[in-house]
Length: 441
Image 1 (cartoon, rainbow, N blue to C red):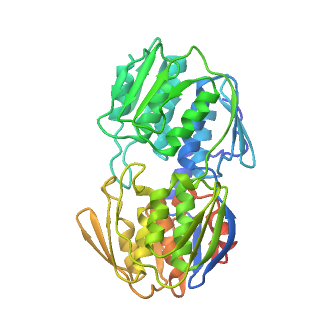
Image 2 (cartoon, rainbow, N blue to C red):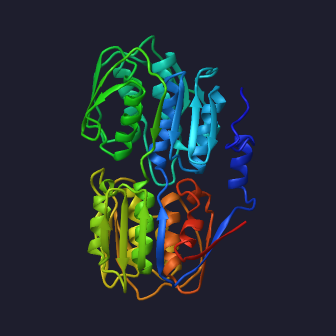
C-alpha cells in the first residue's frame, strides 16, 4: 500500500471510530446568540459532487486534477478509501490530484464504508474498469434506510454477476454490456454508480427515472471531460454511449447548494445583510423561493447570492421532494427558522423516515414543535434560550447551529464531528459574518 496522502488521517480506521463513539474528547461549538450577520463569505465546493467525482478517478490510470474540493471529513474518508486500494492522491488547498494507475485491491472494506455510505460509489467504477469489485454493504443510517438494491439491479442489467457474501457485494463482469435500466425509485447515488459503470460498457445504456440533482450533472461533466459520452444528465433519462477507455482531465467541483442554503437561512433567522460568493443560485431555486416567503429580500447573480432580512421571519410550510423540489438536506435548517417565526409552519418529510431527530434538541432551546406522522407542526416563539444540545446527524447539526445563533445566551453544540462531514470550517466562516461562535477542543 502506498504512503497515505498528507491530507488524510493515517490512524487505523477502527481507532478513529472508537474515538468518536466511546466517549473520548470530541470538539464542540460554543455559540452566543442574538446578533445579526453581515458581510461576505465564499461558498465551498459541494460534498455531494466531490465524493462521486473522487470515486470516478478510479476509471482511469491517468492523472485527474480536481479543483474546488472542500476540506471535509467525508472527503478525507473517500481519499483514504482510494489510497487503501493503491491510488495516489495529493492535496494543496482546494486542489486534489488523483492517479489510480496502481490499484492493488478492488475492495471497499466495512471499516470505511460504515463511516460513510457514499463509499458504495466505488462499486461501479471498480467493476467497469477491472471487471471485479468487493464492496461492503453500508449498513444502517441514522436518518433512515438507504437501500442499495437499485445499484445491484442496474449492475445486473449491465451483465454483472453479483453475490452477497458475508456482508459484502461481490461483483464480476468480463465487460459490462449496455442496457436499458428503469429504477424503481429516484436514487442519486444509484444513478451516479450506474453512470460510472456504463461509461466503459459495450454499447448504449439508458437510465430511466434517473436522479436530476445538480451533483449528478456535475459528475457527468467530469466524466465527459475524461472522454465519456453522456447526454441527458439533469433530466430523468440519461443516455451513455460506452467507450473503450477514459483519460485524465481537470474539473472544478460545483459550489455546494446545501451550504449556500444553510448560510442564507442563518442570515434570515438572525437578520442582517449577507452576500455569498462562488455560489450557484440556479441550483437552489426552491430554497430561495422559501426564503422570500419567509420575508427575506434575496438577490442573485451568476455566481453570488445576497440576502437581507430584519425582524421575525414569516412561517414557511414545505414538503421535501427529489430535485428540483425542496431538498431534504435543507429541511432541518428551515425548521430552525420556523421556530422563531411569527406564526405556524408545517414541514413534511417525504425522503427519510427518521429525519426529525433534531426536534428534541430544538425543544431544549424552547422550540414548540409537534410531530404528526411525517409532518412537524412548528409554532414560532418570540425567542429561543441557549442550552446544551447534541447533534444527531449532519443536517441536524446545522439546524442546531442556526438555532443557537438566534437563541438568547450560550448554546453548546456537542458531537460536531457530524457537522465536519459536510461543512468546511463552518464556525470560522460564520465568525467572519459577525457570529459569536467558537470551536472548543
